[in-house]
Length: 169
Image: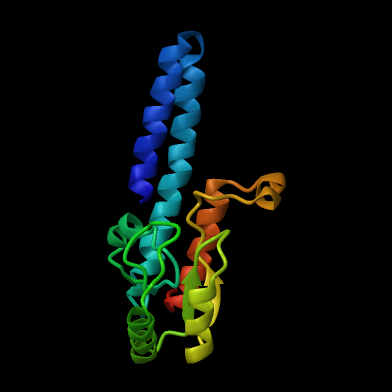
């Protein structure tokens, strides 16, 4: 939820300013600039996702986008019931997601970063849906870190992938 991101930026900036009052303006000015970028991205998400043909994110992993989906009027479907990394979905839950994907007419199934997308791959093979990474931004690979990827980069990429998968403008 990009609204929550802005709150986190404020909280972090205030904490730094409190610990280092001599540089308070530096922290607060940087936070304001970053929040402006987040607000602009948030606006682009609202604009694009409001035009989406599909309003449900079909996700073959542990869904970490609940607040995000709610913010933009979306729902989500995942065969996983919880967030435990070792949790496995039931065959029934996978079959139900396959049926849901077919019924919706969607052509994409999303999966999470840094985890083998075996469940999403099964669903893709059964439905012909394209696998697409929807990055939760809470796990960054060494390659991404070396490339200097940022939260905003990840979320901009997610926006483009959601526009395609949900058939938005």
